[in-house]
Amino acid sequence: MPILVMKFGGTSVATLDRIRRAAKRVGREVANGYDVIVIVSAMAGKTNELVGWVEETSPFFDAREYDAVVSSGEQVTAGLMALTLQEMDIPARSWQGWQVPLRTNSAHAAARIEDIPPENIKAKFAEGMKVAVVAGFQGISPEGRTTTLGRGGSDTTAVAFAAAFGAERCDIYTDVDGVYTTDPRITSKARKLDRIAFEEMLELASLGAKVLQTRSVELAMRYKVRLRVLSSFEEGGEDAGTLVCDEEEIMESNVVAGVAYSRDEAKMTLTHVEDRPGIAAAIFGPLADAGVNVDMIVQNISEEGHTDMTFSCPVDQVKRAERAMSEARETGEVGFKDLVADTEVAKVSVVGIGMRSHAGVAAQMFKALRDENINIKVITTSEIKISVLIDRKYMELAVQALHDTFGLDRAA
Image (cartoon, rainbow, N blue to C red; front, side, top):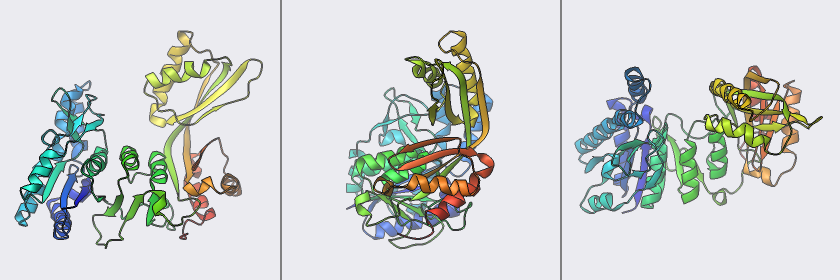
């Protein structure tokens, strides 16, 4: 039988009624002739509750015990889903990560998948099981301990299973009905995309779009897993949702596929830094060691042997960055006059594979922002994206203006 992977997020399994609704969708695919692997998240809010219990119990917790606690939410959902399917006379059983086994490294709370041998589940399919309900987000370390893959890890679990089992498709059921050109809460003109290329989805996910976890898109692109993003709450046919696929499967698309934003950004500038070989390594090495996720980097033109170095990072990492730079200055690794933090900025980006073959996208973007009197603080570009830092108060205006400028409310 062909295999289909179906993943249900927390809102899709938040109550017993929603689990029953999800089970009916699974039943329809079984009736269509598939053996189905269902990946489930914890019921909505449950993981946050479990994390809260761990942090209240032990502020400096053992990551191994953290994983033991927070992985339990998915186990509950998997068991309830399997029971629901059995009540529908569909042969199903639940699987925890260690039973598959989904093998990971030993990085507790942020484990990476190393192997998913398919033999155990395939043997049960051969014996007549129609649905394997697998607890997402969790695996087993070489030491035999339960591990978790980091927040949003059930998406990664689903794509990894689709790759390991050669699934025909991986359907991700969530609380939105697909991937949009931008956040519909910001502009009512946002349009659902029928298809989007892996590269575009990867950029949008990394730039702030929260539909799919970045790691899951990376895996899908590497192993050519066709992903479909669908709503758990709306019925639809074969063409429902958004298909994330190779760009060769997309006949024609707009130059720009979407506008992404990240609200909680900070711009940090080291002033009067000595301009010498190795200065960038001296700055960004300590930041990396401190766990600061640096994004945009701009170095000013050197004047009299000194320069300014500007970078962006998440706003909740500003204190960490300030401490790392202060320590680097005390040890003599880096000399600078001031570290100036602007915590009232946002990042807005346009993304599209069509940008490779079309000139003038940057000029259009900058003109649109100029026309709205929005000042650009930092610019970075790649082959298929342009990102700018602007004052946070203008973020929604910028997203709306760029969406209109590139005609994203209209299909190609």
